[in-house]
Length: 77
Image (spheres, rainbow, N blue to C red):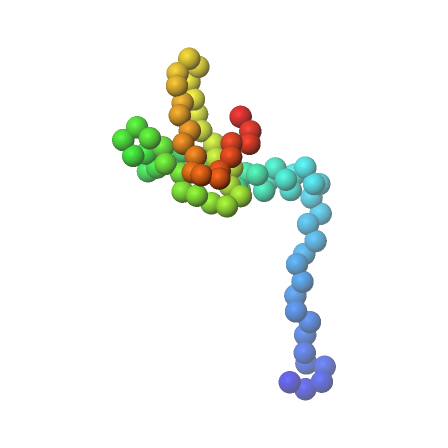
């Protein structure tokens, strides 16, 4: 290229949304919800995704068993 023909690389556009909205959108994008294809017999199986939030449904007065792999933690209920 000749001098003056080089263009700067396009930068990321600044996100002007409020922080609360950006966090809500990030949480929504990271949430893994149950799907009808995720069931094996009566067990909902979630694929592991680093940083994902997993949503599950439970019934009052019914047992819900959550099996975690070694090193995994349940951080919020």
